[in-house]
Length: 64
Length: 422
Image (cartoon, rainbow over all chains, first blue to last red; front, side, top):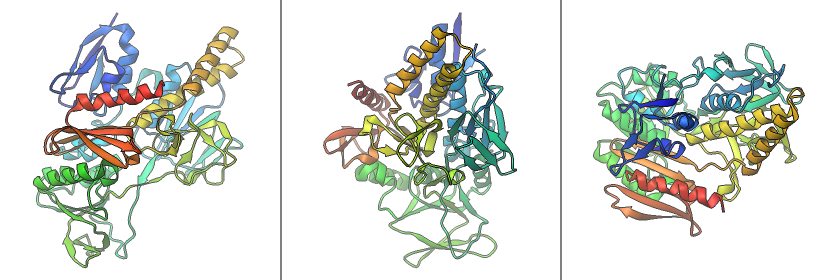
């Protein structure tokens, strides 16, 4: 099973707090903009949920 | 399976910290009842956008800031639009404004802050605002029309962000504050001066080193009187002069509530003797906790990451403790719960504080406790562009902040976390 992730890039302000919680999924690129992997193994679910919690803009969603 | 306890975990404050506590309770195996009491009529929502993105939009809505509610916490009993007025920790009850008495097994204090307000001879309220709640933001948004003359009292984060937002909406904004520079206590002189310079370039006026002594107007506000005798014309007066802790409902109990709720390093509320209440915790802005990362002194931290991290810490502790005390769980599960609880207690609550702020094109990000610093040093970039400052107390790094350069600033969080593992 996999978990599908969506970031609302209109909301995202590239604070990068998610990077600490789920470093395999989220990263800041060389221009300090957020990049992410849209699909990950279920083992990442807890990390993704933690990333959702710490997003200042509440821009991260798990796609059901 | 975990036996249902008859008395619920009671969370007072339907806030982000309260919600995160409830979520952690469920995630770490607590299946019993949870009740959350909140004085606002809204379910928990995200406050930072209220002075920025939400306030700059056409309409302020609950939906735009509501925290998503998870399946695991769907059965939390939310008691909204009701306020805790007294608590009796001896008999484990909390009483609300409408006279209901709530019993608890564990109490989580998450009542947060309310805005401080000045007392003026002219007690005019029309045109006078604060920003803490969604309802505050709705009321303010209606008045921030192009051309409106806005005076913001207070030059902290909320004051500066609100000044930027109002300016972008076409208002004529003046910031009044007794300090020399905005956000000076946190950012230090050099970076604070740069923030003011950039705000001025965008059109914000500053009356620094000044105080508002009274309001002018009869039916609605027309001006504010300053302590140098001048009057600033004003249609909309916004106070952003800090906060007060919502702890009055705890008076009469064996607690130290002189500045929030004094806790130990695991967020247990302390008795005046220094002992702890094993079933009473404080989370979020009101928790005055020891943080081993910064010398173990107790302090409250009004940064956005604290509600989430403190809620998680307390939710885990209560969940494991309830499993340990449950006579129906088997020995192996209990042993695991003891080990988990002890690991959390040993780790203690050691968050790396973090804040960010957006004002026009200035995007600040910081880690650590900058207020402790006696010295700041520019270590990367150019202060008029993107830059990074390090903050030191007696030569020891206590924080870092940057305008832009987020990847660099982020590296400092790990620096603090590594020190933790020493």
